[in-house]
Image 1 (cartoon, rainbow, N blue to C red):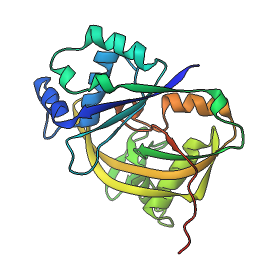
Image 2: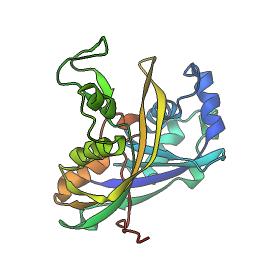
Image 3: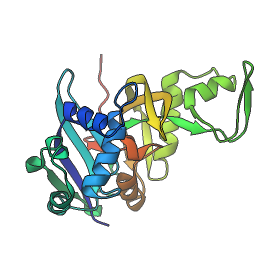
Length: 246
């Protein structure tokens, strides 16, 4: 399988204008939802997935990163056929770049550093009744909220989310919990099927050891956790983290 890391600059205010023009604006603009629709329309369904939007504080422009089976040249050829004038103001396609990622880049037992944005939620395997409310089997809940509903108060929010991450990395690697930290946490409302859903939005910086290169490459191309089509789950790779001595 060929895999390419894609990078393209984007203008945030133009995403908002496009979302309003397409009727995707509700109480606020869900940028990840807008990008989900934009990327599919311009580059083809799931051509840039998973993806991650990174915007510096107080800036109106940032970079979109994504994994794709197509190179920058192929994606540009597709975009030139499909892109509309108002969409061309969002992406700076002249600066779209790609770099190949292949099996040869990694070895079994190799440590990798990563930066990943996730939405640590779970689907209930059985019904829970708590505080006069019934949470039916199959409902999606914040993993920490689910722990509290089960009266499991032995772990902090970060510990619960770290366990959630460990499980999702386990098919291809071993998470180094000492070198993995929750760098950002917020509650974020997103729109799915025109419903406004509240949930956790978390960024982890960490280190893992690869034990299966094939499965690892597969997860790079599909992302980890839920909502990978909406800007979550993309593993941005870095050198392994280091313990800082105080």
